Structure formats: structure tokens, C-alpha cells
Image 1: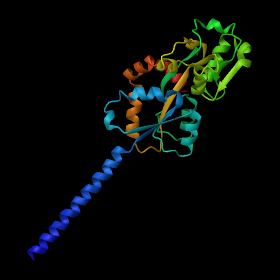
Image 2 (image 1 turned 90 degrees about the vertical axis):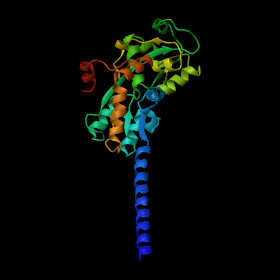
Image 3 (image 1 turned 90 degrees about the horizontal axis):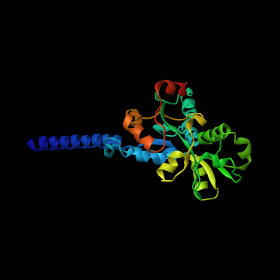
Image 4 (image 1 turned 30 degrees about the vertical axis):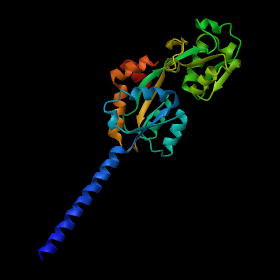
Length: 265
């Protein structure tokens, strides 16, 4: 009988150990499941530099998926398993909000993009060089890309749109436009200023009053199973130190509450 009791106790201990092991495995699985961050292609490199300062980053497992804003928006609409989405504009985040696909009140402006005139073949001194320019000019598609729309508005502000509109080479997005100029396929281009900063190129910043603000917004996806972690990342991007770093990387930081509220209307 004692041997039988001992065997029963031993089997019970083994069972308890196996249950504990399973529980640990499940918990570990929860901890190591990557936070899936969908980010507009133009902000992907900036985000990597920004997340280098993320507190306890060694304990946070995340995965960055970059593509055009419109592509990511469509993927989210069709159930892509993203947790947080950093858009290159305010339009798609607002649409996701209207479609009730995001966590309530998670839509925030995290940065304002800037544009700049740039050439990979010659040094530019001012925007006045566009007045006598007669060659091809690269911009992103003004109908689909926020940076392209800003480029068009800037050219209209300078009264140069009628002169240059037939000389345009339009990229699908601002990344393609940047590559067109960097490869020297197009002599001049209007690109994202952040692209120049990160790659250590010199260009002419176009004053932000020449175009409507390029508000880049983020949202937390409603279907996310890691909302708390996504909120931590959102809060980190919006905090003062991160905003200062974004400014160093070529973006304008979040504006006053009044202007921020106006953009989010």
C-alpha cells in the first residue's frame, strides 16, 4: 500500500509540473508574440530610429510592416492582423475611425511632414531656380500621395504650376520620387525633407505656409489583442522627447492643441 500511495503522489507531482510547464509556455507565447506595427513607407526608417529609444525595448517584441498608406489601409479593412497603424496622412485613419475599425479616441497626429526641393546632380541655392527651370521635375502623385498634393500646392503658391505641370514625373509615392531623383533619372524633385535628413543630403526646405499641413496620424486597430502595448508605443511616439527627435529627423512636431484639433475635425 505505501508503494501505491507513493506512486500516486509521484504521478500527481508530475501532473502538476506538466500543468505549470504548459501555463508557462502559454504565458511566454503571449509575451513573445510580436506587436505588428503597420507604417507608411516614408516613415519606416524614421520609426526604426525612433524605436531605438523605446524604454525596455529588449522586452518588447515588435514587427514593422511598411507599405504605401493606401495599401495598408486596404489590408486593415480586410482583416490584416495589425495592432497599430502609422499613416502618412490623416485621411485613411479618419476613414478607419468612421468604419469603426479602431480603438475609440486612438487617432492621433504624431508628426507633420515637410517637403523640400532637391537635386542629386547640382547644389541648389533657392526656390527661385525653379522659375527658369525647363527640365523634368519629380513629385509624388498629387491625387494619391499627401506629399505630392503638398508639392502641387507649393508650386501653385509660387505661381509655377502652369509652367511646370507638363514637365512632371509623378511617382506612386514619395519614396519612388526620392529614388527617381537619387538615381539621377530626374534632375530636380520635390521630396520629403526627412528623406534628405536621414540620408545626409542637402536641399531647400519649402516653407510650410506654402501648402496645407501634412498631418501624419496613427491609430490602434480595434481587432488588436495587444492594445495596452500598442498604447504604450503610441504614447512613446507622442511624448516630448520623441517629438524632439522627430524634429531632428526632418518632421515638424505636433502643433498647438488648437491646430491639432483643427486637423482632427
